[in-house]
Image (cartoon, rainbow, N blue to C red; front, side):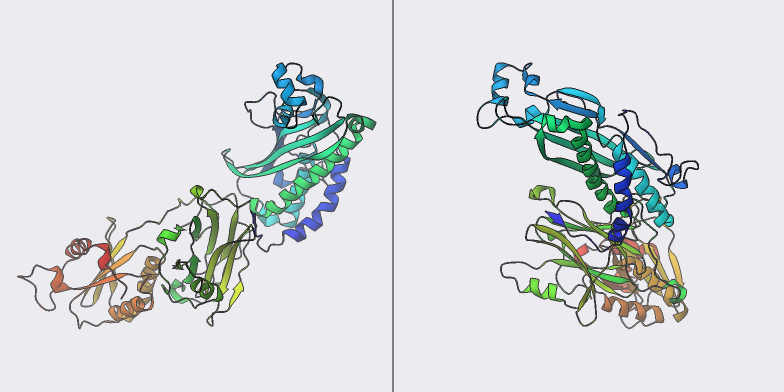
Length: 531
């Protein structure tokens, strides 16, 4: 299944680079080598290495060793009918007689090596990539990474293999496979691009004529096809800084959260990363599956056509979840079939964008007409939607934060009101409590606490007040916020008399924070219902 491509400026970059790259590819000719070679210059400068070469090394070499009959094809391998003589008579019959010859076994015969005809992954692709990468960083100098990485071209198959069921069949098929691997500074794999071509056939004489002119032409076409894949992926491999939202208008740093509705379905998982610079540098991760998505109307995001359409589907249980996420921070969404489903999408469905404060979004993983699509939409107050532009998710991170997986989470914060003071304690950690003056000047600080709690699904609030009629600036602000976001802030409200021992409890009695935490932890999660 193919994936939907997110709108990017990649097509403009492709058009700008492919023409000179074609000329570069046509001019390349060099003997094969098997040791990695680092790029030292761009296509336009040779005397003074470009700065990007210090950060991005371009190498080539054979693919990793596999258990097969021959080594990776660094140079051309030709397999003729005579190459099967080492096989048993039974194997020979399987190869060259009957209606269903064993092409796989034939393709992997050792054959003869033509040292002067290198695999395009060894010389041609790396040299063209030098021009591409240098041109990209001239086009986007702000995309130059802070950490080093490697683009490695690995040669796997480069062979002319005799076809047909008899020795007399004169056609030879050109088989090619190679990969482009992006590796981080520590050598770990960040991205891999596969290039496979096996549909060009001609007689061996036609392949060898004029010093393998047909083979060299095919190598150039294969190179351009593979490099075109690299052009489409390079903005994700080396992304430009993501444009940030201007948050200066929000006083005291109290930035309104954004809200997002994520649809779920059987056998599929949509993953949300909050405050995410890339897949491994984020604040929270939420995996939304069919069995952990909630009921409709969780946060009050306006109903959309997609929601109404799913509600009207017969014999289908509607399932989705809504979350508050930090406003003005980047989000990443990824979608995939679960491993046990037996299905998969060709490529990765993933996109990144900055969530606008106070804005609503919805995300839908759709499969239709044998196509996988990840829809990200901005939801307006009247329920209308606008497609949200998202860029490819970066494959290498510059950040160093340790990621936090947040589902399942069962965090709880205890908020204890006493006259003139509010104490806030995380019940699952031994951190010092936060103390706020119970007046209007502390409202911004309280809202920050609530924003963090609501953007971490699974966090519940246990609120202890002196009595049922108690009123104060922060208590009333807290009550209003809980009413606005009942599912995001599941809470349990207690009076002091319910915390202190019954024989000493009295109306308006004060309790200490430790007693409040102990009492709140005794309540089962199901008691923290939406208010």
